[in-house]
Length: 585
Image (cartoon, rainbow, N blue to C red):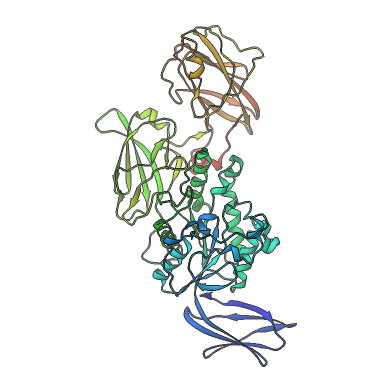
């Protein structure tokens, strides 16, 4: 086995006589009470040691005990390991694993041997039966992590296999600790206690299962803060280091990229609110199926985790993972267009790519036509005017299966991030998905148009930020038509707001029945946030109605979102959790 260095490992048990441990010339005496003993062993890093326990005439000899660093390896399937076994790293004698059958041995994938697991939870999560042993897959990043930590520290490494595929933060909840081996958290704590009660840190790869619903994705950061806090409290290690993998790619035909990217961006920002936590990107790594890192990617991932963890523990010769620093707009030197400069921290050497660098995109519209790498900076050349560009947001790694190929010269990837504002930070809602009326008789330039009386609203499944009615407006052979859009704002406190409206036909906007904006000359193309329409909103619900003239078939639809204008610059520089926004329905 491997015991954690730098303190006393706790051994407990029952004995009818006083218990003494001998390790070479060292002698340790246990405290005994009512037949229960507690023995604290404090040994220097290294080994192997032979530990002899004596209680009266009884003797137990434990051989081949190493002392070094012990790690919790937890999360879901990408930590459990679903890479092909033919890619497994060759074992090293001084890197050991505590397999799921409570057996220590040299670490060789699969270390998550659930088919022999002691803890009931792994069968319960599989419908009450044990998982079958797979023939061809089972490689994860933990073994490569342990081997790289051995190279960096020179001391033995122990891996506690605790992960289970397909599990969510709800299933990892510390509130389930009292369920013991019937819960993931309880089983993890039990495994630590069984091995001396002390560990060097936690490596974690989880988050895919929290991308399935908006209400689940929205609370991921808070769930992670609660989880890390509970682990540190239960292990009596208030600054226990945590190295977390930012979820990678998913070749997905069902969409859901918004929530996938939300989890990735939340993970990127976790170090701001959780001390002694670092995040390692994985978006560039190869897969062995639609969602699981495989091949040499697992060795790379383990090495990245090890370097990141080595930094957290004050090790020399390592740098933190690459991190997004800032993005801002500059005027192009040779044209009237604007460009975006993106800066990154912790770059070793300079940023490089094996081919044309790619991975960046603007959320609201297309515009980037060239990507130039320059040291720790990326220059994104666009065909957009500076004022338009200032209003947009930037993403690296949009969607579930992006192609991202930018690394530093130490083969470390840029993290997925965004959407982030590239102009001055502003308090913005997402784009509205309003309800609409059917096409109505046209009203020309809308001069005398008033609010509709008892309109019939219908749900139109707008798939993008642009509320596109071209399929309907373009099917009436140039006839003049009219359509209304509506949404409600739920305001939790007094706010100064602005409706940010883009449109491509004559338009009017009302809030709570009051006309606030009219443009009889709206025409193609519709531009995001073309007009800022200010109004004050008291707590409660407010109805927004917009009329759009078809412009004889030239109009397609609208963009609509809202900006809060009364948020202080200090709060804007923090993040969206520092202030409230209206809820759109």
